[in-house]
Length: 117
Image (cartoon, rainbow, N blue to C red; front, side, top):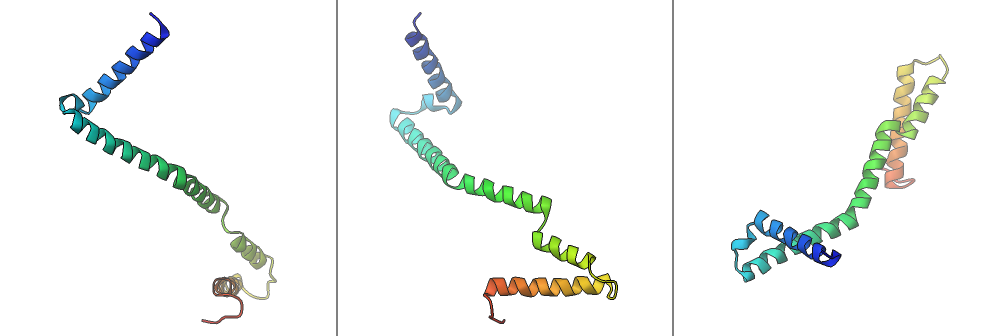
């Protein structure tokens, strides 16, 4: 048996499995065409959406996981400055002060430098 004949038989077997799995063998040719058209359109839309949006979504998930694992650099530097501060004030007061300055810096970054609420 040649390679072409065995490949053709394999394709016929796969077509038969497809028709039996989705019960297409009992439909008319027009109904088969309509079903296969909907299946093709749905599959192609899913494939196009995956190629367009999945890389961005994976990058977003990796960045979010990195953030959860390592934390925020601004918060780390604020905590380090609190821990290195002098003993004249309590740590709680320094944390409050640092949080207020970090919050106002974030607000100014979001709203633009020099703008007030």
